[in-house]
Length: 392
Image (cartoon, rainbow, N blue to C red):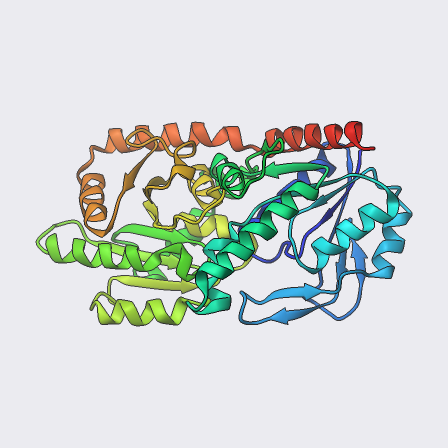
């Protein structure tokens, strides 16, 4: 098939939609299909085309994770697409480039598939600052419903997102297709352990049992819950002979606020903020830790958990129904309810027999295989074929 994906965010940006889009682009071309991706250009104000990616200029939105807003149509990009006789359009985002995708599909009279990646009602506070929040959420719900019902075929990355769409009033068929992961970037066998040893020593975490978070540093990720839980752990287990550190990898709008929180909690000596790392090194940084932890309950697919499983890390996650299919409690990881429960579960991990811990990690790695790129590609192609078959 000949597919055009439209997304406002793409590699080298680091976020769930960029990762999902980049992985899909990679596997579809690897499977022998022709896939071209239209996205924003973080490098220049020109429209460029290379390696099956069309990058169009846009305005940087510094208050919104530095995302870029492109215009609703780009004639140069459309001309490039025209030369490839596209069969189906796949829209991954709702703003400038996403709108461009809908316009292009309508112009060429071809179907478009839409993936509802983001639970936007969880992010309205960025726009409202807490004011008129109920109204903002209602607008977002209605807009999401309209987006979902307008597409030829609809994809949800998880059952949680599917149920949310049902609550919004969407009653059409929803294809649940979890995002696939390129496991090779995270697996132990591909990690330079000499470099890992050097980086650990440089960060002062080479002789400690390390809790780690990797991802965007933002309010909705609940990292403050982890910090408060870790502070309570340190307070309660002060006499423990197990030395620990909490390593936080990533950048984002809440970084300075969380650094200040760690100072306020008087745990800054035990917390290491690594900061933003290159996209191609993310897999390496998971291996700084022994246990991966996250308190986010806004995930639509739990990509970081899948990556951590591929990196053979034990998982600790704040309970969220969306993660039930990703994490099996006490088999592939541990759920915690709140800060106090976090303490109990972390103590459980530290006291766990080494063979038990290794068994849980092995099961988690085995479970992660169902999120392979190949499975992802095959499932999405089936949706494309249905869209083309049923298109009038």
